[in-house]
Image 1: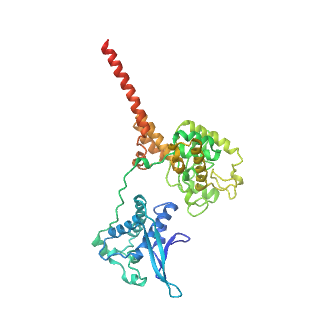
Image 2: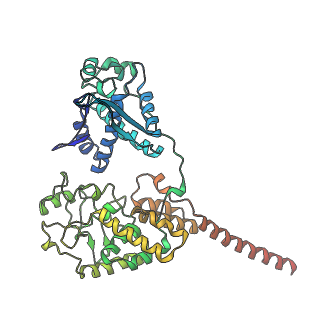
Length: 443
C-alpha cells in the first residue's frame, strides 16, 4: 500500500497482523522528486513497482547464498507468468479461510523491464546514500521481529564495509529482457486524414491537434501553453516547462513567474501539477519556438487562435477564479486536463472511422494523442525517403526534442507504400533511359 504523506510517500503493508513499512521509502520518494527530478506520474509508477516487489518478497524468502540478481530473476519469472499470493486465516468462529493478499496478471517483457527499472531506483538510492547492507548480511533480529525472511524485510539503515568489500562496490542487478524492436509497433495517425480531423474539430480542439500533430508536442506540453507564449507578430509559439527556469517571452524564469505573478507553486501538488499535466522534456531540444510540419499548419494555427478567442468557449484571464495564465480552459475557466481532451479526441477518431469505414483506418479506434506526435515523426521520415537529404533525421531529432538520436531513428523505417512509390519512380526512369539507349543504338 502506498500512503501519501505531506512531503513524500511511504510503502507499508499488513503482514502477520502487524503493520510493516519499507525502510526509507519516504526518503526514496523525496529523492526521486528533488534529486532525480522525476515527474509525479513516474514516481507513483516506481512506487507501485516497488510495492509489488516488496509484497512478493515477504512471502518468498531469499536464500542465504542466493545472489540478488538471481532473486530478482525469480520475481521476474513470477511477473512473466502472473502470480497470486494466498494466505490462510481463521475467522472469529475458528473457520480457516483463504485470503488473496496480492494478485498480478502476466506482464509483457517490455512492461517487466519498466517494473525492474523502477525497483532498481530504490537500490540506487540506498547505495547513493550508503544505507544498504549486502543481502548476505541481513539483520535476522529485525527479520524475526516481523516474522519475515524476505530480502527487503532485512534491509537496514547502515553501511556494511565488509559486505561491500566482499561483493564489490555496487550490487549486481538483473539486466532487462531483450525485446526485439518492431517498426510496426509505432501507431501513428494517418497523415492523409489530418486535414479532415482539423476541419471537423472545434477551435480549441483544433489548436491542440495542431500543437500535437503539426509541432510534435506531447499532450502535457501542449496543455501547458500560456497566454504569453504566443508571438502574434512573428507567428511563433513557445512551449515551456512550468517547473523550469527557462525564460518566457517576458524574459522571466517560468517557475518564478508563476509563483510571483499568480501564486502558483509548481513544486507542490496543486491543480496545475497533476500527473496528466506533466511537461516531462523540452521541446524543441534547444530553448526556442516550436517547429511546424509546414507553414500551412502554422498559418491555420494563428487563424484558429482568432476564431477561438472570439468564441463563447474562451475565458479571459481576468475572469478566471483563481487567476492563471494557461491557455486551454473549460468554460468555467478551469484547466483542460489530458483525460478530458483524450475523451474528445477518441470521439473524433470514431467519427472519422465511421465516415470512411475502411479496414486500413480501423487503427483509428485504438489511437491516443501520442499518435499525432508519431505522425509528425513519420511524415519527416517519409520526406527523407523521398528526398534522400541526410540532414532531415538530425533536424527531426531537434524538432521533436529527442536527446538520443536512436529515439529519432525509430521513425525512419520507410513505409511499404513509400518504398513502392520510390521503386516505381526509379523503374520509370530506368525504363525511359533504356528506351532512349535503344533508340540511340538504332540511329
